[in-house]
Image 1 (cartoon, rainbow, N blue to C red):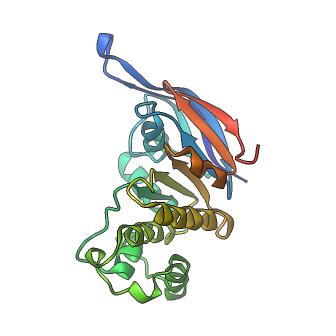
Image 2: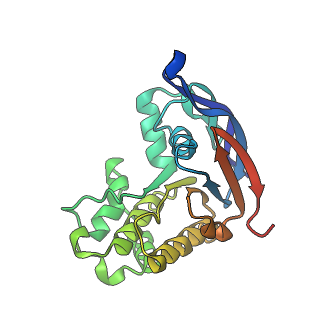
Length: 227
């Protein structure tokens, strides 16, 4: 089942001599449960691609379809609600709310939509994350790796069709990085969520079903990690 379809996506900043073509006619699609990674040097357009796919940044041209819904045909408020309910974001910076404990941070997206959390679902995610004994801890009482696990839990709690991860291991040591990769793989395979992750670390691409490269704003597919 096709979850994500990107058609002829372009993003331009500035004009004249200051014009920068951050993305150039990018097209690809992803199926349910696929784990894709995007590699490329700094400034190649990787984060711009993720931000446009997630509706955080508006494309200059082209379309993004998620579950058949045209993201840029929506008004800003409609897109904000749709994004919150259908896309999970994981960033290099954890963006946790310091006054809320682990469990409260994880369920926060549900509360924004006035939804009652399913305690069984919350308990399952805490178990998968290895945070059952940390559920009442504040972010300041956790290691960096543990905080990133909380951020992953927050991204998964709404059962989003698509998880977008921008350098989620960038601030972590090698063991915590591997833990994060294991969790994202589990999200893809166990929960059948589509994951698209940016990384500069090519060693991590072994976990992916598909690997893409962005260079000078153009996307090419390098194939599966096993190829």
